Image (tube, rainbow, N blue to C red; front, side):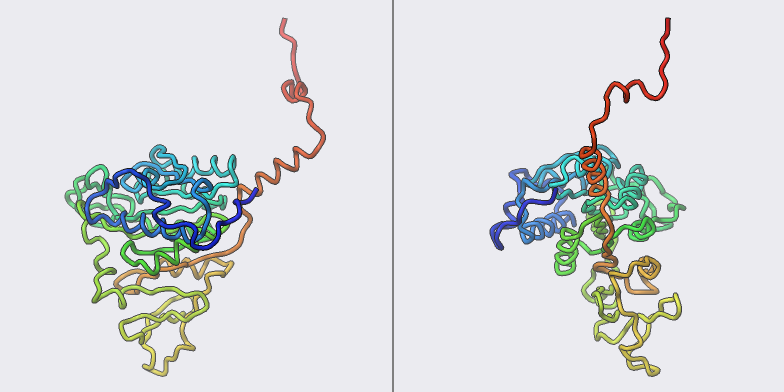
Length: 342
């Protein structure tokens, strides 16, 4: 079963996806921008609200379903991908979104997260990454940087942080993207691309928590730094960045390096051309490891490849078996061997 036919263009507006609930995030929280961006993307795609469902786990991000005028379910800690998988199998006609956080998805929910990626269930997974446990008032999370001092690590955490996009690529997710809460242009492109993808579409949103981890991404979001510290990926185009658009990324074998265009004979033809459709995840994984301050942080769609979706394959199996001769229920209950107990 496929999604119902889309409505005519401009039929839906972002406000059609807003509920009558008071949005209760802290003033200045990056979640407001994510909510607005997703509502705009859903309105643009033209699929009616009753054909969409939003599933969440536990955390600040997981209030998302309350504010989306779609079907929704606020589930349990870390289990949103599992519940969303069950929903997609039972209702393949629905477009299913998952709202989760860095703690919800990558700590207690780690196994559910990686197996959703591995199976390529047709889900749109938004991971709000503020590098902190915000709902429980400021403990370090699986993405907190090494040495981070928090309420649960007063002398600095000694944990090595997870890199969400690296995990998704390692699990061979068919769609992987990253954006920043305050970057409306890139976010709009990423959310729309995720909505259109068939299979697991994973989006990491680097999001600010103004109360417990304010400024977590200032090195990327400050206006005077953004052009030099981020690399906006465009499929089929060379990787160029910088205020003057004079810096680029070149591949030296499998080692990326920053170069200056025009220096030492370097031209745009020498630069790494982004291929989001590359079937081999090796080069995409290299992108996921590019970090500040050695490299600009890549944002945009990193990977978008076609693979059979888990829910489609399962439902095809079910339909195939249903088309065959009905089984003898009593034989199935008895099994191959049975005993009479007297």
